[in-house]
Image (cartoon, rainbow, N blue to C red; front, top):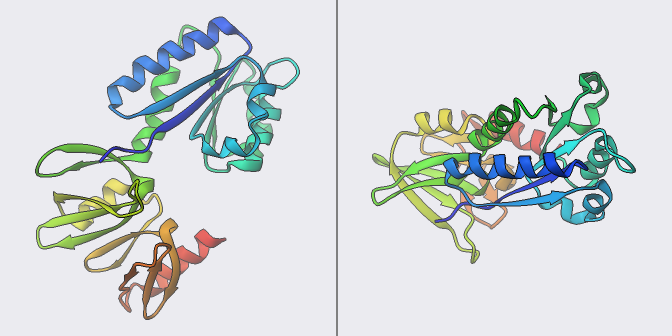
Length: 240
């Protein structure tokens, strides 16, 4: 199984700094052993013209101080289409941090070529450590996309991870592990325990009732009476 590609966009009208960001990201992300797509923009207009396609990105690095379209305007446009991607603002003006609640989730870094490697290192770790999970199957070790997990079932001493497959069918990975340990590794990123043997990605759920859970693909899973209220509350919160 191959994990979903991580899509990254960097926008800065300083082409020297833009190339430095490119080199730094390529160097750092190589250590994660994941697929990625990196796009560079030297002006905000080109990036914002993508419109609905902005929803396809996972990470944005934006310079705030740019002519014509600055980082604040770009972030506002991004949030029209994509509320989940993380925005990293690269700025010399730390005072901007109090003016950006609409851009969350976002993080600010001081624009400085001296600490650029640290900026890239910490920003990528912030996203990738939360996004991916290592699954040690009997035949290989895979860094898998948490967002693509549909549900996880315990089968004796093994766990079976059901992922969204490229062809529509589930892709399944197995490893020797315990559900309690995996819940800690998932770090509560949208997952809930539904009974003694099952963990569900709440984003994959279509319906929750006392009779059970229905996933968006039609899969039906049990929910125990003792866990129903928690599962329903998580589902209702996610539906918003």
